[in-house]
Length: 602
Image 1 (cartoon, rainbow, N blue to C red):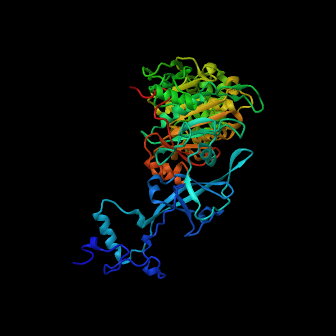
Image 2 (cartoon, helix red, strand yellow; image 1 turned 90 degrees about the vertical axis):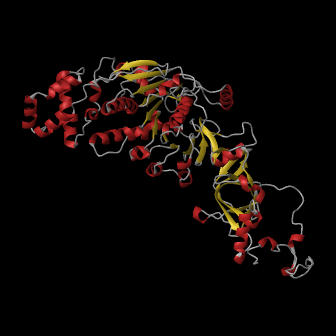
Image 3 (tube, rainbow, N blue to C red; image 1 turned 135 degrees about the horizontal axis):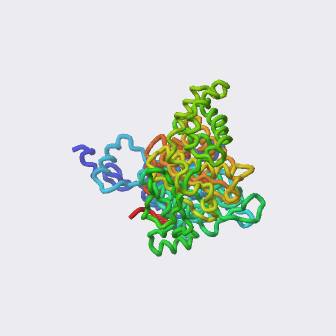
């Protein structure tokens, strides 16, 4: 019988092969020394989870690819570490290196050589493995150096290499973690800091760490005016998260200066475009236990229904709105054709080329207004285009070629069910539409015509943007109210396209995004297809919150760091990663388990 067939009799002790007495531990020949006879365990308790290793070099480098920072994790602590775990390594003078685990690897401690088969079969016949035969090495990514100045904990870029065999420990102090990750102490609550789908626990009370977006002018502009994107697939919980974030902006204590340098502050107004008819429910209280409500109070999280929530319902011929899933007031309105004068692309839904658009914008619409006055209607405009004498005159004068005229007359038709319906025009309801501290929801679920939906949403959004950016605004209420424009399924309205009207829309919203900080205008975009949002708009977004996405193109489009990108396909409902360079390091979060307002139709 061979040794491999019965390796349980294999002598692993310090005795000789013939079963004689153990060698003298005092012998000068290391080959004959029984190291197991020594007590290598010092007195006292272990500190930390392991030590830094210099076996493969220990280096902090300006080029992150050249940084080598590895730690040996002792056997008893291996179950407590995972990718993303935050650790601290002290310097001799009291400063701390704040780092995260970027990789974990088992290395062989003892050479196996021809005994590999023996070790493998021993593992197969035993109930577990002996981790003492292996080293667990953690590859660390240095995040910051923490130091005290004037009694305050501060951070700077990693610029020192810690000493070999420095004891490393879990970061479990709230101040150390928030400082290391550059998370603001106050601001708009997004979720709780997490690693690997579990909340980061600290020794403080509460034991979790709230992640907040900076929301004051002390250290720059509030990030709401530097724009937010929430991306997530169907069932990922993005609407749940969006409602919870918007509820924070509607908190009675939140207000912003009307203009730079002014002492007077005004609460923000939120206008939310809602293709699935879900946001008007924010009027009503959420269904959550009392203990959750008390927890929100302790952590300064606004919760409960927002009473000043109004559903502004667009009147579209052939579509009726009936909602029994919320108690918000419903206000009907119509889009007046007069709004087309400033935004001719609103009636270019079938696609116009540059020549046709110029004919519409600079010849036909101005002439129609001159002849028919400011109160002219869409039906009046289509009748105006039916005049053959007008067609002939413009062609003979060389101002509009007859083929161009015919193309415009054909393609601007089909909007009769959108404009000038039996309701008060939105331009006469601005004080109701934009209310400081109020939530206005524009549901379009009842509108089955995609082109009509796009026209309504873009007409209202453009009205708000134009007034915010104008040097001579018509509506003072819009100009003086901090404004958050929320757009669900934003990819349907801000898509990149070659048509002239798409370029007009993207240009307008790109300008709005660029000037949002100055004008107190924030875009709050929600989408499951971020790859379809036009790049010029996307590039202006400062805060990106990503829930589960299964599509590779969508994941790539959100343009987040690779360490976050790899987590996205595996996140459960309510888990998210946040990339907001002006607010913090990239982080993983867990959103609240309950919606802070009503959510769902049950």
